[in-house]
Image 1 (tube, rainbow, N blue to C red):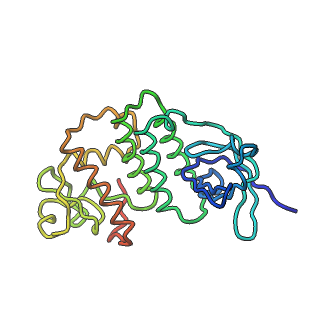
Image 2: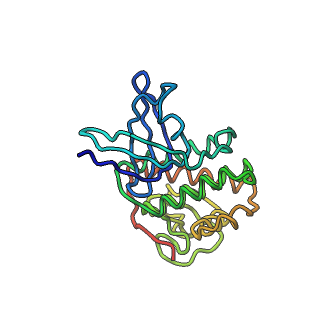
Image 3: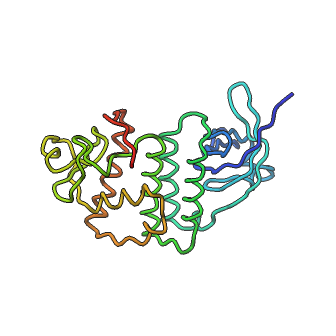
Length: 250
């Protein structure tokens, strides 16, 4: 007897295949990442057509075949129209989807990731979330997601000598896995110079209080440096490097 699995999932990517089929990449509350084959969903009369789409929350049903999982039923729980209809927010959602696709390669249930995605999609869909806040929301997601993956950098003490960080002369060392003090920064030619604003932002992000983060007033220079450091750190991890220490925020 064919077993039918049911769960609720956020759709973060879709890819057309063959003439009328589509593959959806979703993150589910019960199974983690799933790549679901939706047969003939691009036909006008498809029963699945209105139940699942990119950047939606759906109640889904699927079966496990020999080589793939096939979507058998889908009911839309939340469309997130403000994301779909806003180019800036839509692009942010695409970037979130790319992060998920790059890091999540197999099925593994993770309630914390599901909760983080829920927070991100609903906040991104919020009409009161401006385009500028939406851009910062992506980095709020990125750092908390990396933290859940075991890549939280040390931002309280120096990642090398472990002394308490002071504002001046600090840098971000990807290979050491965190912020370096002024003395240790001089010994690491690969570390990226940052300022105390970056450290403050990261400390607040790891407290997971978006309401506070969204009200931060950050200068253009510091914001650009924060975004550059965040993107470079993510690329460093994806390049296959491992951190010297898998530090946790205390």
